[in-house]
Amino acid sequence: MPGPTRAEQRHQEALAQRLAEAGFVLPGGLITRKMRCGKPNCRCHAEPPELHGPYLQWNRSAGSKTLTRLLPADVAERYRGWFDNARRLNDTLRELEALSVAIVERDRRA
Ligand SMILES: [Zn+2]
Image 1 (tube, rainbow, N blue to C red):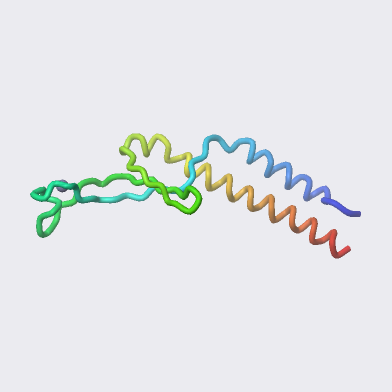
Image 2 (cartoon, rainbow, N blue to C red):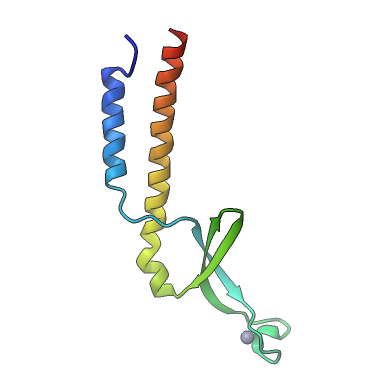
């Protein structure tokens, strides 16, 4: 019989439920950085340098560009879970695509 099996239906429903519960999602990721400032006599330009920070840098791609924002530590902590949500959402979407592709491939050969 063409189309998804009962088991595949249940798998799809479980994945759809996970998609529905995704919550807020942020693209990209956070990295921790230490930096130099613009003041030439600052300790960050000494030898050896004492850099400022650590700062949390949020990188995300927008088309062909990478957008960069520095986030204060408290802000980064508040929204850190939203990056994890995005990863889970993407994993779930990939799994749903693979399930769907497998169904069509099987049907195509039948
Ligand atoms: Zn400095």
